[in-house]
View (cartoon, rainbow, N blue to C red):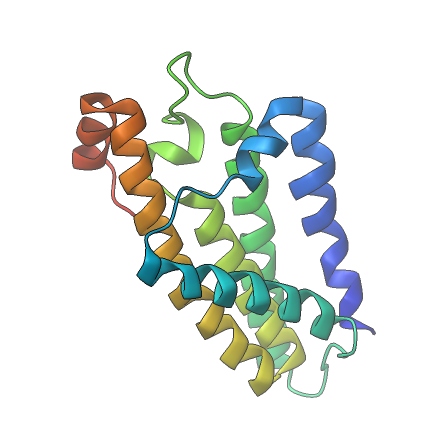
Length: 173
């Protein structure tokens, strides 16, 4: 089976569901915080590796030869989709202040990034592609730098409310 089919739930949740729940949420999700000079290459790596992951998946097949990898891949992929759904549902309904602290955001300040990691890791396991794994690592490392810039922006935008949130909730898990 073609691995490109694995993209369907992600696209439906990330773009379809998010825009249905809150038309402004899609714009908020696409917003990148202002970057400092040393963070700009991270944005290019993040965007490039994300594009590569999405496109490259269309050329791969799901491997069914090693059932252990297959079942682990299905579980991790399903977890990534479930986390993506939960984070999108939470993201669509921020507090009046604009901060997301409900739903999955009670446990992670960056649940969408976490969901994407599990989603792509599931795709790596299902396709058993080392190339996909390498680009997932590039994606995740560069995402960390994007997250740091977002946190800096949130502190400027929301002040003590966000700092208190940072003290209560971890960056990832």
